[in-house]
Structure formats: C-alpha cells, structure tokens
Length: 430
Image (cartoon, rainbow, N blue to C red; front, side, top):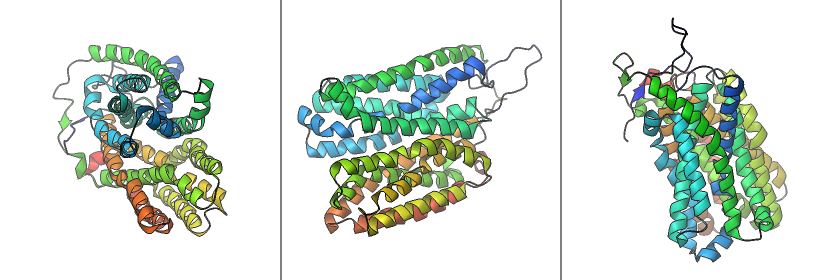
C-alpha cells in the first residue's frame, strides 16, 4: 500500500508570536481555537456536511425498483450498485491525505460536497445505466473524502472538544441516513411521483453544504498563501502507518462494525419478512435500528473521550449485538422490537470508531493518515459480508446460519475494539 508522509503539525494552538500576529500552522490551515461567529460557522459546516454522507446511498434503496424499471437495469447491475458505495469509500478515501496536504482539509471537503451535489443532480438524467453508475461514483467519491476528513476537521479545529464534536457530526450522519431512507418515497410523491425528481431533491442538501465550506476554504487559502514554504525545521516522517499495531486494530474494528451495519441495512427487513412480519412493519423496524444511532451517536463519543480505555465500550456494544442476534435466531417475530433496539445500540460502534480515530493520533497529519487507512481498508473488509450472508441464505434455505455468522463477528469486533481502545497514539508506534 502506498505510504503517506506525515507532517509534524501540532493540533493545539501555539502561543502568539512576539509581534502579536497569529499565523497559520505549517499545513496552511488556521490552528487558532474556534469561537464566536467563526466557531459557529465551522459547527454549521460540519453538521451539514455530515448530513450529506449517506443520503446518496439510502435515498436509492426505496426507489431502486423504479430506477431499475426506468433505466432497464438488470438484476446483476442492481446488485453491483449495492456494492459500489463501499468500493468507492475505500478507493477514493485513500486519496484524501494527499489531497488534504495539497489543498487543505477545508478545500477538499468543499470540493467533495460539490462533487456529491453534481453527481446527485445529474445521475437521474444523463447516460442511462452507465451514466447512472458513473455519476453515482462521482457523488460517492465526494462522500469518501468527507468520511476520511471529518475526524481531521474535528482534531484540527476542535482539539479540546473531540468527544462532543465527534458526537455532533456522527449524530448528523445517523440523522441523514434515517432521513433519506424514511422520506425519499413521500418526497417523490409530493414532487409528482417521478423517481428522477425524488433522487434529484437530495442534491439541494449537498449544494447547501458547499456554501459554508466555500467560505472556510477562502479563509484558509489566505492563510496558506501567507505561510512560508515548509523547511527542514518542520520535518517529515517516511514511516508507514501499517507499522502501527493500533492502526491495524482500529482498522479491524472499523471494518467489522461496517460489516454488521451493511448486513443489517441489506438483510434485516428480509429476515423479518421471512419470519412473517408484514413488509411495512419490517421497514419500520429497520428505521428504528437506524434511528437509535441519532441520540446515541451524540452521547457515546462524549463518554468515550472521558475514558482512558475505550475497550469497555466496544465490548458493551458487541454484547448488545450478540443479544440482538440471539433474539433474531430464537424468536425473530416475537421480540422484533427488542432485537432492533439491541442491534441499533450495537451499530453505534461506528461513532466509537470515529472517536478513537481522533484520539489515537497526536497530530493533525497523523489523524489524516490513520483515518484514511482505517476507513479505506475497513470498507474493503466490509464488502464481502452482505454478499456472504445472501449466499448462505440461498444455500441453506434459511437464516439460522447467516444469523450465526453475524453473531460470531461480534467476538473479533470486541477484541479489535479492546486493542484499539488502549491509551496510545500511532506516532509512538511507527
């Protein structure tokens, strides 16, 4: 894997220079503490960007039948479309560190939101099936760099509030996920019933995200222009992030929790429907699973930031997952509401993983590298899970074996979470 050079960037603001002029850090971004109107703009920008990190995916599912009919899309291509998000998150996420060093994280997030807006606006109307796939990939590429750089933004501009700010933006991710899944069909009906307008509507949210990030980017570009060219005193490191055991543990934890989340989103309604639960109720049960992440994603990072070792939280979430899957295996319909609540708790491992990314690196550049590695490789690890569950269901003719697999994955997830939750930073290991 290509290595990414580390710049020695302090995440905390330096003391003011003797001349009283506050200058940007060596990466060209403003490292002063955020506050007042400036801090408010950063918070708004962070939340709106986070709201856009999942609707590209979750708005498509409710309309997939209509999209297939409208474009003449085969079942094989539709199946490929469900795997595209994880592939794009992995592939384009690896580019985020290099882009961030060249243009600054604010500029890259702004460009990512613009790419997402363009992809969402154009994909319903241009190019048939190939164009739909290509423009979906463009939208997902913008999301991929946002996925990687959100922990970096928090680390750089809110170094003393990593827990609360991570909680805020992961709550916004969960809210965006649920909002798109729940409202796309009613929104499509309100706009006249055409699936193209239903998908197009989400481009407006992405355009809204571009505006505050454009303002922040202009400010940071001025700071970068005023920064002297980096010299030998700033230094670089050519060590590889892959030498860090903590980076690997965090990658495994991220990949395993993503596997569980994708399996739940893809197969949980089918499990309930095969157990005799009505289709409409099965959809509501999935929505409850996702909605559990909205308040808990705000609270969990705040708690994690106060603990010296986050492994206890990883174990607790895995136990919730084990209990939920055990319930699905024993009485999928009888205790359905309890099982989705437990699985919703378990899926909050996503916010814990993002919090630990911000805590397991000392510098802003370290967070960039760790975030890119953990998320890109983690999403690659997550890709086979939903496909394997579908194959096992078809092969065995039931859900006992797939559910047993889902439960078994909770054990290595807990182990990886304990290893990743130790109080150490990757810079010391590499």
